[in-house]
Length: 149
Image (cartoon, rainbow, N blue to C red; front, side, top):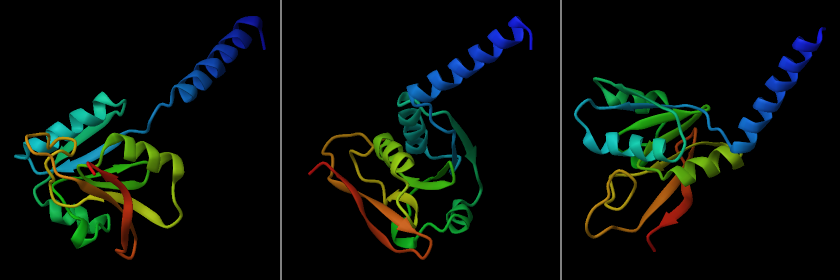
C-alpha cells in the first residue's frame, strides 16, 4: 500500500467514525395516501430532526398496514419503516430515535393511534395529550411514551 492509499483509507475511516459520532440516522420510508396533508407535515418534522425520508403515495394504505402488522387499534393515517421497525402515525422524532437506540426485545414498531391535535404534523389550537404505543408482531400494545400530560 502506498502513502496515498494509506492516507485515503485513514480519511475514509475517520469520516465514517465522525458520521457515526454525529448520530446519522437510517432512512425512513413513508407510505401515505396521496391527498393527506398532515402526512407531509410529519415528513417535514422528521427531516427537521435529521432523518432522510422517502415518501411514497399508495392507493390502498390499509394493505401497507396489514403487511407491516400494525394492530387495528393502533392505526393512523400513514405508515413508515425505518431500519426494519414500523412507525405508525404521528410519532415524534425523539421517540423514533429512542426506539432505534433501545430496540426493545419483541417490539416491531411504534404508533400514535388516530390523529391527535398537538402531535407532530397535527399542530394546532388545543393540543391533546396522547400516548405513543409500542407494538409486537402479535398485535399487543403498551405505552412507550406519553406527551402533553
